[in-house]
Length: 294
Image (cartoon, rainbow, N blue to C red; front, side, top):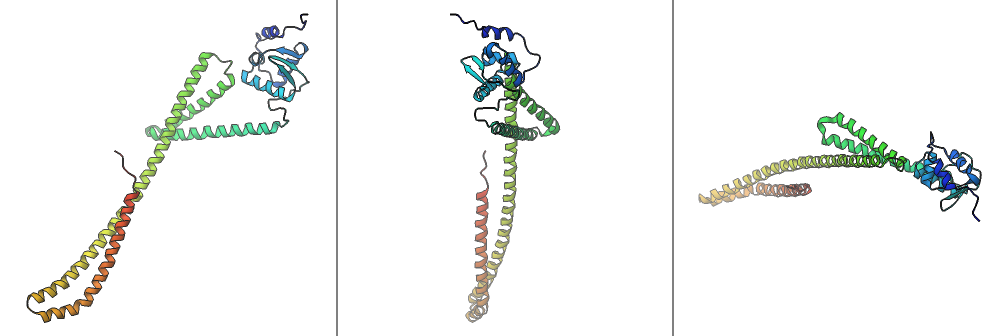
């Protein structure tokens, strides 16, 4: 026997031709389902979305939440309202009975996503000012406007993806892709400037340390050279007395200057060790300097 129940598919097809003046809220959507013959309707999420003035994603989420909460029952595309539902039913209601936890997760996800977008935008704009340093304020104005436009376009597409025209979706997707590429360029400029600033600071510090080490090496070299000159003078005096055939005088000079010469030699050894330490220090400084690429 053929069922006398009205054809819900034809009913929804007829009603979807009338676009609501404003989107339904949750209570109005549930009331619309209950107003159907026997509280039954055969339609998919896209058809219901058009009827309620929503997008397909929102309609699918609501239907899933209502089903989990036990307010409706779904059999393929047939939807049956099982319990009276108040207008306070939202997509956070579920079988677990913990809407607050889901709300907290969504709020945390929204805050994190907003923070990521703001940080990325700030780095990108700062990097663009480094690349185009001659137009500081115009670049900031342009970057801020483009970043805001990118976020608004992405949010609008997410909300109206199934109802927007295909050409409009393609244009917005292309625009968002271009703005994302511009964002990457700005972030690269920010990181490149940070790297160059760090390298310049390292080079300056190493240059200061190298200059200090070289100055101390020069002073120590002069001290050692002076000590060598004094030792050479003592040795020359002894040698000159010996050459002139005055060994007694040579021995006398040697005895007189022996202690002085020993003290000078000891000082020279100490200063020579200082020079060696400074040379090692300078070698370490040179080793810390990053290699230069051609």
